[in-house]
Length: 419
Image (cartoon, rainbow, N blue to C red; front, side, top):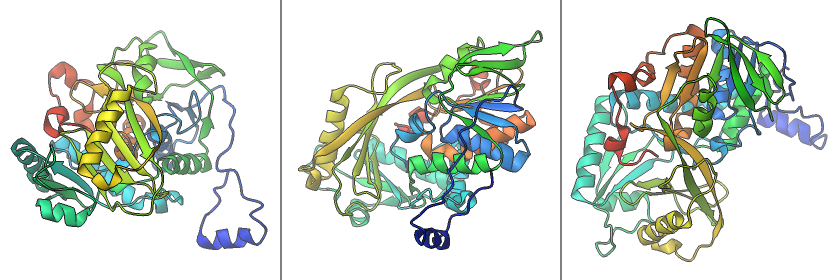
């Protein structure tokens, strides 16, 4: 359907008729018997892939199938941090490609994704932290990615609630700052891509779980069995986050993935008081403030593998203890709610993007705790890979074959934590 243009003028015009006549953002499509391509997973990465396939590669007979509702998985369950200050060349290029797309995404989609480049500050608490963060900072600069070093006093000036006194357990001895980093609105990203893809003819099919992947005599993908019937297609892109390994086993492919719960929580809303994103790798805590005033707080992954969207209480308690020590003015705040997502983690803590041994089957997974920040970049390069049946130059290092060849991109060792 034709996309309805949104602007301040259209909002004013509709207000004169009590906001009657707005179109639905996307159609409630029914599955067709055949598609040129099907994307499995209705999160930001999957919807974005469908959008770029249609917008840049001319494929319009596409479906996105989602077992629940779009944006109901990790896209709607993360802490919305956006940055590209990763150590290795391949990682920095991929994530910075995403940051560049974030900068104009609202205009491209005609949908306010509320991207806010407020800056991401990463704290150093020890000599080792200083060495690691400065190494990353210099590597970033060599790759054309902005990053700078702050003294404790400069860090506090940039983020006034931060406690930098030497009496705390983890004193702040410095920090790096990526000023182009920030946050965006997670559900708006899913809705924006869904609306734009639908306007280009993409069918978005919710409550449609994949139960099997059928292959022809030559081994190539032939069809998907779903809870809403058989869908024939020669091309399938699996973008199912924590459930990617489950879906890929249907095609007899074992991925080097483990799935863990990752928890986050928000406080009661308060007036604007926190101007940036602050992360601490040493204590596995990070914090920002949403546009609604809530403090958005995240922790490290739970220690056990699970497909549940909840985790252990002690993980949140440890995170809150650290937050209260770094930001003592927040100690009296009440926590409003907490939730969990399922993160798919590879052995080198870097994603898998590319072709598989099964002709016509492609996979985009393994983003761990860093998937949201990569959403537009991930979708863009994955759409290229599917359309051209070859890796995008930016994503070539992230193919599945790197685990066979030993060409790992070990961001776990480089960054300490992969948020």
